[in-house]
Length: 211
Image (cartoon, rainbow, N blue to C red):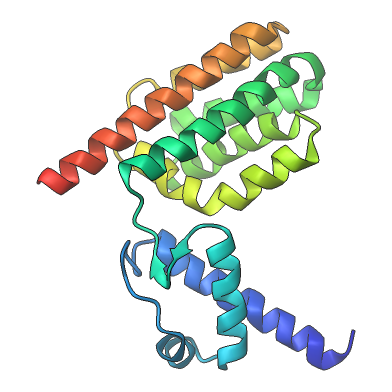
């Protein structure tokens, strides 16, 4: 790889991270039109890295038809249906295969979930689910969830910022089932947990529209 190629990839990665962060923190709200030229000027990049960044963000589902994603109720239900299938399976696998050090990591995520700052809770929540998904040992599953990660973040932020009841209690129940090597219970608890997340997000979504 030439130095020019390396510089180009680095610029694309930087542009991707900056645009993604603007979407995730609300500076570019749902429904906002994405204009390449304006972003290039605002962020100080040429159009090529901006174009590459937008391609990646479209692949992850954060940009749809040159607009910041504004998920509908159907989009939300579809997303959580996929998560429930993959993460339910992963929780069952974790009960069989997760090593002790990863169990300890899950426990630590729960501790942070009860005591941490909002930013720490967000990271611990993401890490909790990440550990369990990786326990599936299925690279395709991991990649599928990975591509959904940025959109999932938007809803994870909702459940944390609006203090969804029993969020961390449910994490603890999932952890206990995995620790007891009870795969069927871990699977059911994960599916129930994600359904609670979905119902809560739909409630917030509908409240904001009706408000």
